[in-house]
Length: 113
Length: 114
Image (cartoon, rainbow over all chains, first blue to last red; front, side):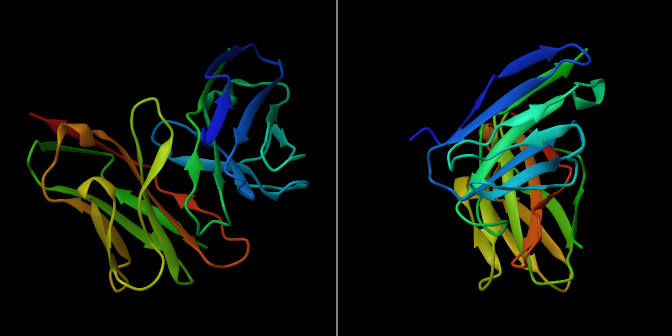
């Protein structure tokens, strides 16, 4: 039981490049989330999904896109990377909604230069 | 709308001393409250949570927190700090209401000296 896995662990992008951050969970959780963490700012929700085929915006969705074709996978797409997207990205999952415990992946550290 | 304020971005204690990390929340509906811990270069993991019922909640690693509705607080305590407690701690609030997200505080870094 690996829990929530994320790839890659680190990535450096040039301005304007695109990339996909991968997230997979093996706990059969319905809910999945993407957060970004900036120093001294806590975690901000980017997108979330309540099940396969259903996604919705969080607090800071601009510049990102997501899809959820299976229960297990919830990739985050960055289009036209900008320096403001330099951050640590965490994927999480929970059995049900926000009142449930969230299980976090180890994170992806992204730098945009 | 909900919000969380963590008082003190950095707390330093000696090994064996009391740990007190402060969290105040704002919520228009009965809150669900969480404390998560993040060790260096890792994801967050749940320490404890309050949903309903008993206001004193015990978590992992000897931590506990008390929900005080009158003070809108959910402070985290541990009687005796250990070196391994050094980490960043996040308080978070949610509610059992459709469309309510989990809102995180900005975090408190706990340092433990020998």
